Structures are given as C-alpha cells and as structure tokens.
Length: 282
Figure: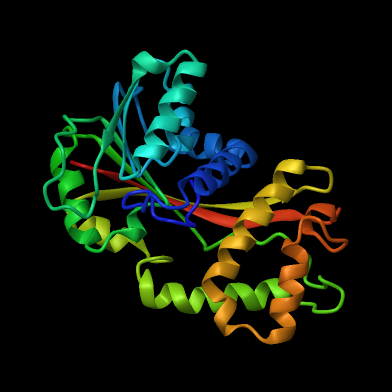
C-alpha cells in the first residue's frame, strides 16, 4: 500500500526494489491498515473480496486476517508482485484463500472477477488513466449491497525533522515539492476527492475517514530502509530540478557507506496520511 509506482499498471523494471518498499510499507503501517479494515461499515464478514492493484499483498493479508472466512482475488499488472504475494500466502498457510489475476486495470476489458462482496483498492485508483470508467466497472461487478473501499495516500511519507540535514535544512520538503509538481502533471488524480466520483458512478458513500500516521523510528532498521528506498525513488524523479547544493546533500543521505547516511540517523519518523472512502452499491 505505497504509491511510489502504480500497482494496477506496473512496469516490470525495478520490481524487486518496489516489492521491498511495499513489504516495508506493510510491515511499518500494519496497525494503521488494521484500523482501516476494522472501520469498514460491514454488517457481516465478506466472503468474496477483490484487491485491485494489490502489489505484494499488504491489503490482501490485512483483509484475510480481518475476515477469516473470506477468499481474496488479488489483481495486479506485475507478474513479479503476484509471484511474491503467492509465496507469502504459502508461508502464511493461506494459499487456498488467495487467487491471483494478472491484469492491467487501464485495459477496458477487465477479467471476470466474479461478484464480490467487498472490493478494496489501496493506492491504485489514482494511477488509472480513466478512473471514472473503472469506478463504474467496480460498481457493476459488486454484489448488490456490496462495499467498495478506496484508500489513498497524501503523497510520499516524510521521514526527516525539518531542521535536517544540518547543512541543508528543509531538504526533504523541497524534494517533495519537486516530486509533487511532477505528479501533478503525470498523475493528476493523486490527492483527489473520490467521494463525488464514487457518487457519480452510482455508489452511496457511507463513510470517509482520514488516518494520520506519525511513527517514531529512532531504533527501527525497517524505517531507515523505508526512508532510503522512498528518497532514492524521489531522487530518480527530481534530480534534474534540484539545486546542486540540495542534490549533493541528498546524495550524502543516500550514500549508505558514508557518515551522513540516512541509515545512521536516530531521528527518523514516518509521517503521512491515508484517507479511506467506503461506498456501497445499493
């Protein structure tokens, strides 16, 4: 459940690095994910669930944990991610409750996903070229009375205090601002209000909730690796727009063998927000 790359229409290059980031995201934000699944307005446990743009399975496994009678169809455009998800399902002894489907969600001809009771889409809808059509497709696929949960993130997480690094304070915010400008051009639906779009697609929006994330990570190796991976990807995107001074400072943070490596810091935290919309097919 990270948005560094689209889960629904993923390119195969860099899959290994992206899979590690998705796994770290799932590990670090597990409690927040569990709180979202517990909040969903469901009167009975769903039996048939679809996870759209499942990545390596953060949502899939959270839903399997929450609903022990359920089976999940996990859909993604990355064969590598789906293989990783299947391996994790076997390791957790839930492989019989998981079906994987390789599909590009921007393809107008979606695979047959049955008639699910719950469709879950975390950090995947905003990557779609035509989300309005995808919303209508989900609406028509859901069983009558079924629920659609859309979970979106407020951009990349922040990790550093504002005063860091010492010689270039505010570096992370400047990097994020540059990345946000690029995303506004390339991924215009990131940060959108999905409520009106869900209503226009025929859903009844029954709830909206924003979950604030602020996890202190002074002694967490996982948070250090998560921060490293996210900032590496931001650097790839924005290197050409940063000042020489900012790029030098960023490279010092990303140099895992250097004295200023982000892995050596004891002041990291994960700060972000996730918003979830719960919409019913009536």
